[in-house]
Length: 342
Image (cartoon, rainbow, N blue to C red):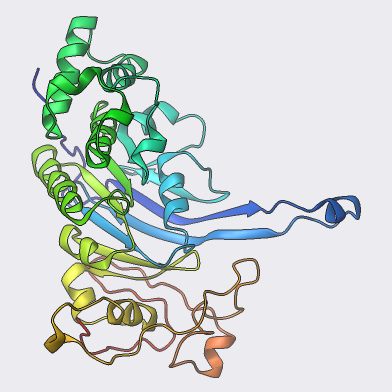
């Protein structure tokens, strides 16, 4: 059995997936006292008017501090969470929360951060891959599905001899490869990788990153790569979207972002990257202060409480993220061009 190469029926350069102003809010649990006194639950805005697009075969990196909404964004795109505002467009057609579940499951797959938690500990590796094929009615007969499982194992750099092993009997890197193989079983067009290498050793991280790049080249598959390690994101991504407190604050081509960051938050992230070579180390200040309470975000710019260039206007005006293909949009009233810090 040969793999089907992904092809794009739309015009060249058209987005594979487009996100328009999606927002997601969670209701916080109430204490017994709050419940019996009738106090309404607090609302946490995990995503605030997020817009982005991914082209066929493109890898979009999404970076930011813990709690900025990266994983929630990935879950909304995969259909695991439903945004209450905005819309998702798949090749120009709007995706509905309920009516397009089958299309979304076949077209968009997700690889989670912890491979051991995302795998069934009581099923062998082969059983899990065969289950994905059976659920989506792929692979034909039982013998054909077994052949497809062997093909998937070889695709991610594993031997078919491992098909009868349980997840606890393989290493962490092998578990992540199984997670990737299971996601690829339905031949998706877009892969959402939610910090797929953060729980792995450095040498294994490099292997998984190289595997994802090989799969992108071989299958022409688009990817959204969510991570907090900027060095990893720089290596694998074509473009990068920087998130802060549930918002996208800057997007740009990877090298343009590293060469000329325009948002103070992006500059702080780049300045905080460790430099092993003492001759390349700088005294550029990193981001000071703590992330604001997401239950009570700042009224103006979300970064105003930590920005060294804050003005009175920043505390009263919420900047927009300009649109435009090929531009370097930044959510800042007074965007600055900083000297490269890395």
